[in-house]
Length: 496
Image 1 (cartoon, rainbow, N blue to C red):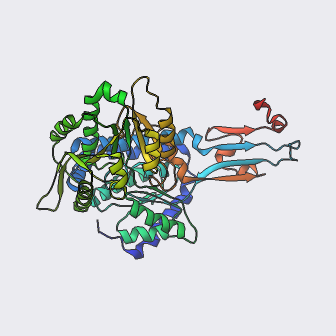
Image 2 (cartoon, helix red, strand yellow; image 1 turned 180 degrees about the horizontal axis):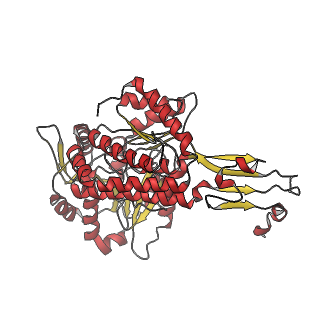
């Protein structure tokens, strides 16, 4: 795969996607669902070759990558069932009503329809689950949209091969040519984001790059939705009761969460609030020393981590619990072990400009809070939007106020565990207020499909012209919410 898709080829790629969009909207859910399953089966069948490519390009471990490939296939199958279920279409039928409370009502029917070609900027740290055939692609395809993926330069060969496998499976199952296409290069990605035939975009990456792309999407003559997953430090709060009950378990779980995949996870816990005098230093240092050296995704990632690590450790008041390591090999790749530091609340407040930004790598900061500190106040003082907030508690601990604050700051509030590891399940919310995401929504779970549809209402439409989900005979057998004539006379009665 070349480093840059020729710019003069982008219009043809966009037009091919637009043609596919016009065909996809007419394809029955069963066919689209079967195509998603076919893509999942094809990727699974090629697992050995795909994982080997991913290992060579990213440095991630085989066990991690095989699990991630399985997750990618599961996502596709989950969305296949979502398509067949049809609830995401939100089909509504309001029957014509001459006696409507506000005067005669026409027949009005609405349904969610595909938004059009979607541009997906793939992530570096999840070469399967948030890349070519990952969650954003799966959700957009499930909604009935073609997808153009901008490959991440960190795994170009894997991106090309995954696209070949998935696109062939989708087309072999009956979807049109151009349903899934791949482009490469920053310039090509930006140019495609500006193309008038692209109707939405998704992104997983840094705050800086995501903000630039979001601004481009908003500045178009026809602004389009841009769904970016950007930065998150995922604060964790440990109550005195939880610490007294399971200190060793908390120390071990923290190190495992921070050290896994070299800390290159958007849900890595970046700050852990603990009572001062917690006594976990020795346990954390011992567990950290057992973590084997792990390669980072690429030289640029390692360089960025080295800068952030140095800046954090040089900040006044920061105490090193486990120094960790960072070395560079002859190929420029960075190899790391976990770094664990601690700081008091006042020193955190004084060094906020340096300490608070996300550190992408295996480093976390323990914040040692006074006994009378109110965690809810600290959460609201120090943190903006995050993907997660975690609460470790014991029976009898009153954490209601903290949880309410957490729900205002994060998309997922979890208890007595660690935020790394995002379950692929219908109720999952993987998103949060800015800067966790640009536009809300979720990139994991079946609700992710809602980002790539738009509602269209049909008024007094002839039956033969209505989309299948809005017809009285309901040929796609999807859920329909029907408001019968005469209903408005009873509105308000449920509140009595």
